[in-house]
Amino acid sequence: MGWLQSLFSPLKKLWFRLHSAPKKRRGIYILYEDVKSCPYEDVHVLWSILVESHTLRTKV
Image 1: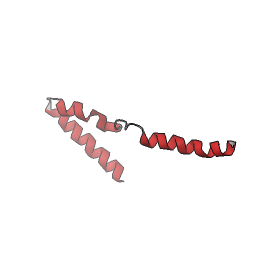
Image 2 (image 1 turned 90 degrees about the horizontal axis):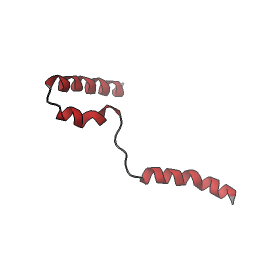
Image 3 (image 1 turned 60 degrees about the vertical axis):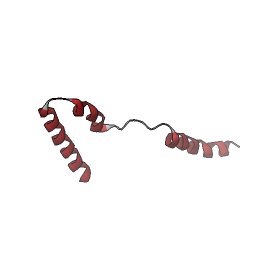
Image 4 (image 1 turned 30 degrees about the vertical axis):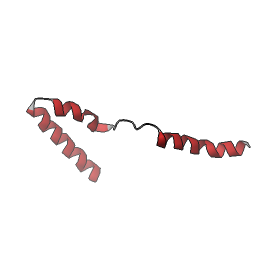
């Protein structure tokens, strides 16, 4: 029966990982709400540059 448990253990871990509460997104986008609420225009310009460079890197 030990082999049966060793077979189902990884499947059980995968099941719990897929059906657990979703985690917050990671990366630069966790700062999006802070940047959006910031009143300074230069912060918004820097954010747009950062997002553009990030999307260019992910496309390549």
